[in-house]
Length: 194
Image 1 (cartoon, rainbow, N blue to C red):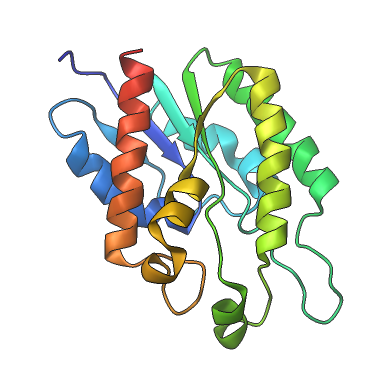
Image 2 (image 1 turned 180 degrees about the vertical axis):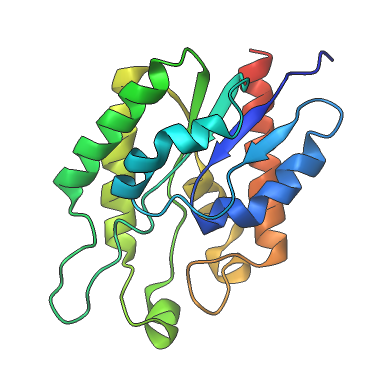
């Protein structure tokens, strides 16, 4: 199998945890790069997109995601960190910027949360209904742009989110990150060898 120059992962802390597993799965086939830290919400990702791309300018494939920070809900006011319409606008601009690079793009759907667990340990809420609404919005944008979907949401729901999500109801156990990493690697290989 021909070796690609590089694959770039862009995402929040979920991608930070599955990155080592993607790297291991693709060893000898791809060089996996990811900028240090997390992309944050869609506003931050948009503002820092060039810095992410500079991490692997030769990358043929970009696997990207944002949303878990956008849908953080202020418990006192009910306001989301980035409201859904603003998320749509930001995501369209991110897609436009990435599409202009000519790289093959893969969008990773936002992973599930467990509201009750999250609420016990965090000061803000993350609600499953918001995950679904943000995923639906992103699905439409990606379909319009012809961008491949990596459905990490359905993977975890089918495997059992209770089993793979940590006590905070948003981050994954090592086994959960490995499961995600395997699927991400397969999505990348599918983009490299269509």
